[in-house]
Image (tube, rainbow, N blue to C red; front, side, top):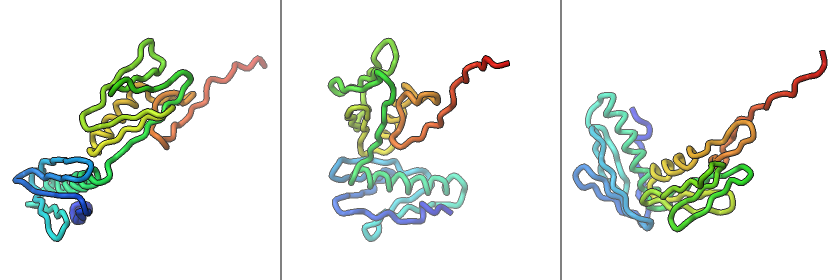
Length: 181
């Protein structure tokens, strides 16, 4: 049984949730999200709460039950408060800037790397930090992962793009060859 699926999801004030056939629509002050209801699950609204239940007991249905509950919860949180990820840039000469809507990264290549944000995602740059925000948790995380993948932090000096609070395991460099024999 799914512990996440069993728990009903409270609908906060200012958030409107509707079930239209096999689509769950969530509307709030930050925007609107639509989720396709996964196979084998049933979504109902009871007493100002979203209740997700399985239609049968097979393995895939139980997996979809917990996943659907988590997706519905993320949609409710997203339209109410939104999600954000913060990336940090480390390295001499490494920097980020906004050029219109596009993010321009100078990260040690012979050319600047330009990235356009996905629809529904906002990017802001301040000194050596990049802030990615939006209402869809998946899109925010995906955009952050794509930016980080352009220059992952390396283990010797820690240069590159990393998540805020991420700990980079550092390696020791080569030792100088000893002249004593």
